[in-house]
Image (cartoon, rainbow, N blue to C red; front, side, top):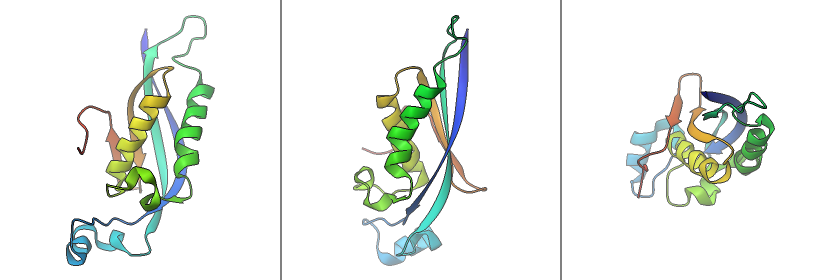
Length: 140
C-alpha cells in the first residue's frame, strides 16, 4: 500500500526582494514594500510531503525521526534566523518564497532517501503559500 505523509516545521528568516537586473525604480514597482533596503522577516511554515509503501513491519512510510532529523539538519539549521540574501543558495537568484521552495526541495531531494519526496509547501503569511513538486527548474 502506498501512502503519503506530510510533516510541518517552523522557521524564521528575513529577506529583501531585489533584483540586480532591475533598476531601483523597477525593483520598487515590482516588489513594493518587500524591497525595503533593511529587509523584512517571516515565520515560515514548511510542509514536507513524502510517499512510499507502508512497511508491514513498522506500519510507516518512513521513520519520522529520520525525516525530522533531515529537515532539522538540512533546512532549519541552514535557514532559521538567517538573512536569505546572504546565503550562497541565493547568490544568483532573488530569495522569493517561490525560489526558497525550490531550493528546499532540491536540498531535501539530495539528502533524504528514506521515502520519495513528493513536494514542499511554504506558508509565508496567512495569505501566501507556495508549493513545489520538482520537475522543470525555475531557472537555468
